[in-house]
Structures are given as C-alpha cells and as structure tokens.
Length: 146
Image (cartoon, rainbow, N blue to C red):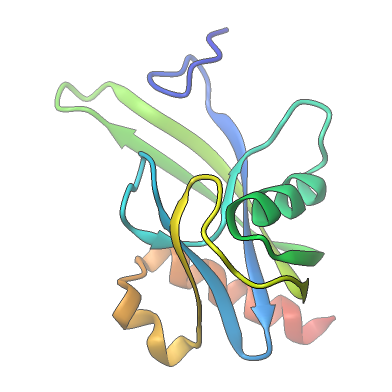
C-alpha cells in the first residue's frame, strides 16, 4: 500500500474538530492542498497508534496552539479530489469530533495560514462550504446533548 497522500492507493483516515469557545467555532485557513486557502475546521491525518480523540487534540494544538477537550463524535465526511483525468488525487475519510476550548490563544501553526473564532452569523464571511456547515450543525446538536 502506498503511503503517499497524493494519488493514494487507499483512503487516508483523518480527523477534524469542531472546537467551541462559547458560541464560536475555531476555524483555520488551509496553507496546503487539498483545499489550500479555504477556511475549514482544524484537523489532519491520524497517526499510527493514535486514537481519533488523541489525533484531534494533537492536530488542533499543532495547527492553532489551542488546547481542547474532545467530547463526542460529530460526523464522518469523505473528501475526494479528482484530477482532470478522473484519477483520485486525494481521498481522506475525515472523522469529525466536537470539542470544548480549554486553553491557549489561537495562532496559525502547522498547516494553517490563519485562524479565527467565528459565530454562525459570520460563517458566510469565511466562505464555509456546505459539508463544513453540516458538520458544525451536527456537532452543535451533540454539544447540547452532553
């Protein structure tokens, strides 16, 4: 099996985190492909030997400097990017979690060119896609049930 993220031989498991601080969600602007330049949730590939919750906490800390407590699963999303010939360039299966901010000031770090805390009323200004909005909505429901 190829370990390359570009044109992989199998989907790559990853994590995303909906981190809440009050009524705001932590967003990152992607510094690298896929989705370079777009605003989304912090996250990335899961490492071997790491649980989903551990991977989410690590990715949030590396990308934003924020410490969080993961509280529940929120959603599973596939990100599949094909080239002009229809070949799969990237395929990530993202396990999204909901989490609460526990400390740290948000600053752009590993794989992020910018970070922001945003309320749902501000999502349009960040150009969040429908998948990201759906994940945040599902995480919001999970958050209320805890």
